[in-house]
Length: 366
Picture 1 (cartoon, rainbow, N blue to C red):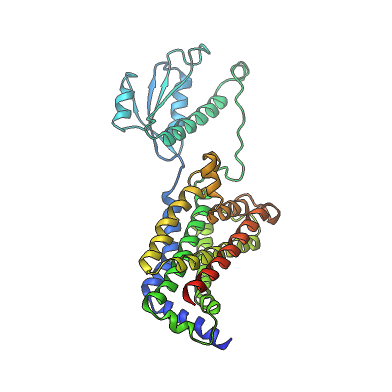
Picture 2: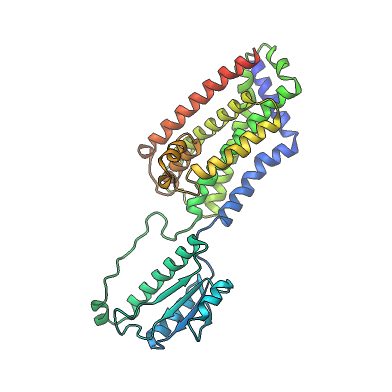
């Protein structure tokens, strides 16, 4: 056991004296969580609006004033001809054009407001028009007299649960946590072990009194501890910088995250048994893992909308199960009873990856 702790201490010294490795391990998570938290956003902000008001009545003027007063929208121009809308959108001078018809609020069949947006970016066009529609509906309900409200169509009341402010950080931060932890754990562990093999020092370690399994364990323990530090840093940044709440039980959150770290470390060990050079290890753990994590984990694209074959493939991505669990705990405030399935899947993955990497490691080096 004394020899085992000596190996752990040696690996710590090796990591701590390499400034570039420390920068990657401790600096990259901070940069990525801030970058993704602020840059990846689907919130509606600073929408440039052009108005064409053919009716000129008091309601349309008040409605325009309230739209302009909204903190996320600004009226930049008033059109004298509706044909100008196409030119402004084509030049990207505005994001949204609102056209009040001449019979606005006079005839139900001819009094609808027209919203125009550039749908070359379909997602943003949907966001702009949907957001503007909600504002217009709400403002009209507030401004119209009671008699006119009663005769108008019923507007459903919308209540958004768990994220009433529609903040994108609530969605992206849990996903970015999974991506950062998986890439760092898998990448650094695989490179660390492959480096020993590439330099020819792994054979020296294996002839020591410590068994091969404990050699690998001693090399992964420092990265597990550093990953725990990263986990604490990410959670603090998410809570106090990005203002993402931790509604659920902190113990459950930490348990799920530690389990995911173990899965990622086991994946890194497996990668190290499949390649011979550090470059190959970095490419496999970085380039090959990054794309599946971003596409098939639910970080950006919902997996439920994918074809069945891709949906089935997403089930082998560990980050998918972690992100699902972490969103339930952090944002929805759910407990262990609602994330047991994700925990069991990650436990199974950890066992399979660990057993596979140990068997493969022995076959290659004995």
